[in-house]
Length: 114
Image 1: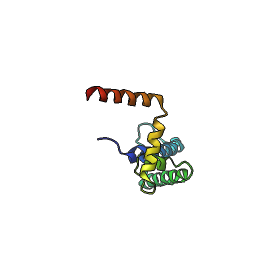
Image 2: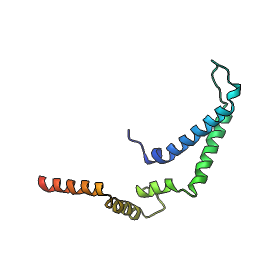
Image 3: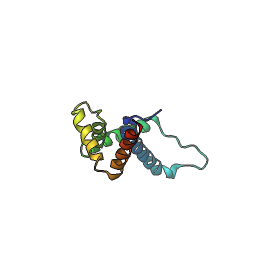
Image 4: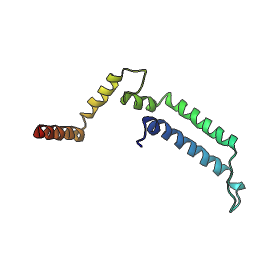
């Protein structure tokens, strides 16, 4: 199963933020750990960590806008002109020499097989 755009953009950011906050919480509680005893985190604390992470990402996206740009480039943002952003992205790829070479080679192969 291929990952979706939301898996790549949104979930990656959210999981990273949750992981960072969780490890920070564990490090704050390290003095109360006992060797050989499983560390337990309350459901309330875990929900708090997830909510704080979600709020942090929302706050960051007001300035960063990386999630919005990802959806725009793929033509999946319902609030923008789909064709405009997709064509801008495709035009930007032609400035990449490696991509341009791949397109040229692919075109030559297509001509040969006709």
